[in-house]
Figure 1 (cartoon, rainbow, N blue to C red):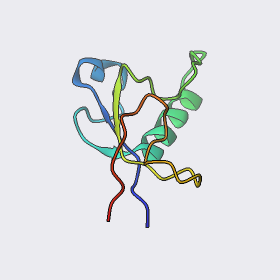
Figure 2 (figure 1 turned 60 degrees about the vertical axis):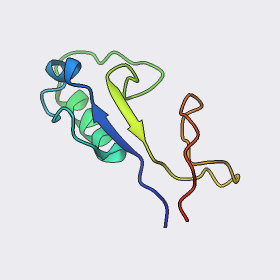
Figure 3 (figure 1 turned 120 degrees about the vertical axis):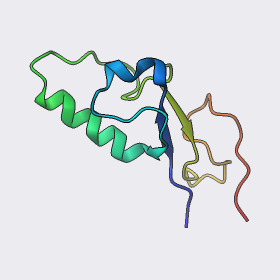
Figure 4 (figure 1 turned 180 degrees about the horizontal axis):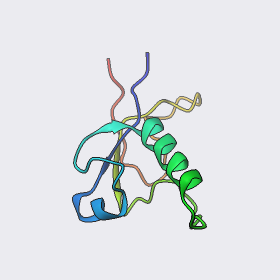
Length: 85
């Protein structure tokens, strides 16, 4: 069983994401789904970037191995995370 990728909204950016609690670790897949749903419901044209969850606005931890035997990282910029025993 793998480690779930989690994300936490930084308090400084909470005003940009009223649908999300700030400072709480949540499954990244749930937050991503909430962000997509919010974009679909919005009358504004979404600003598309390289990532759905901006690394300046969110912190990340955990994740699944990519199947290539690498450490638990899902972004190249993540620090190495030791594998659980």
